[in-house]
Length: 585
Image 1 (cartoon, rainbow, N blue to C red):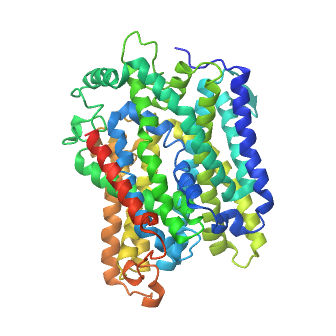
Image 2 (image 1 turned 135 degrees about the horizontal axis):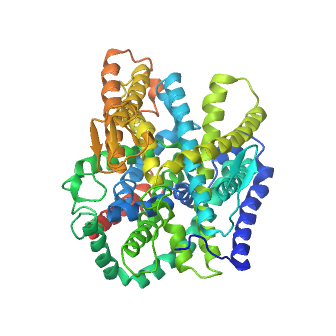
Image 3 (image 1 turned 30 degrees about the horizontal axis):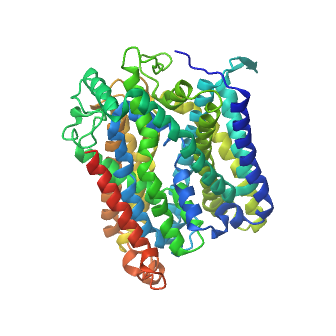
């Protein structure tokens, strides 16, 4: 079927208006960027509802829209575990237990907290590894946006520059990078956050009609379930495997994700989720921009409310796409990945938009996609420039600069971060599901980091030397496990087996990622514990106040009415998440 679509002047006008607003926000905030704190930290002055929506919107990039829709097609309803199991519990934990440490310590970043709790080398290791992760994550968003534009926009051409062939994909990649660069360079973190709020509402408005129209076309929920039973049986699973979340988790071979309940709960529900939501400065930075401790703690909880319902907006379309593809005469089919016989799951949303949205409305849907990718790109770029400026440049390169000097460094780092992200966008093309690629990155970096944070925040005996070597051992363990294993059907060493010997083959990339994370977390936890008992604690009790749970006074919100306290909101969020999990058991 056609993979490019005709857009009218109305569609292009909608897209142009969006870009104008995005750049306009950056230009309007430019005059307030007079210090490094204003540019890199948003002055710690924003209200909870703004930081809460930005908290979730910064994560609503390629991982959410392209990645989760692709996973919905590839793995079915089991993908919702990334929300109700792999996000909500960790967001509640972040709000109630971790934000008091981050915000109360006045650390400017997650790596800086590690310096206060442990030592300089632990901060340095995390700063460099996080910088690498943000560049790759931003690159994934850029790749997804360029893929979208290439799929939907009708322009086809080939240019030559210095012996290199330039395709529409390359041009779209550069244009998207330039737009994000301009508004983050002008307005810093504040510009990124306010744009993320705008992008959140655009995503909701742009995708909701798509889900409704596609569901009506396929025969409603019952029609979808019937067609997904065919998808399941064709792929060798029992009917219902693409619809239920827990029913087929007894054995790895019984569900399309290829993981059993233990690997799911421990790998995703504990290690990857708590490692991502609790230690990833990309999302923590939004909460740290809030104007008060109470607002900072409410930020993840406010973000959790829309987060719980996003599966209906991004995963259901993927399930509809694979159901239609497997239905003869539906008029819809996902394209194959170039050079292979695998479906290109990353094209789910673009293909559905082109199939269902008429001229005029298509521009709104494309704008919503642009918004989601740019929020992910900008979120990672602003996190990168903060960590590079404060935790790498100021700490290891030049520590005696003026505030104006560090403001300039932050701005120049924004440019460098965007350039590096462009390069990593091409690496993402090796995966037929960007979600697989992103979870692999998290397994290497966030999983061992969570072990370090867990011990650092709740065990005052853990030492700086132990934390550093624990982090290092966890990352090396992830690398070794990845190098000795492969997912079924792997055709590139990027997916594992690069050590030359494959000792285990996983049913899917996601199963491999979960177990990689679990091994990395366990290694970091064990090594850090053992070395802490063998090394001397150099921090005094006074040093650890506000950094370790047992050494920190409990927060009592006696000045707030009971219905405005974070604990009540956390209970409500948790109950709703449990209800949804039972509903789709």
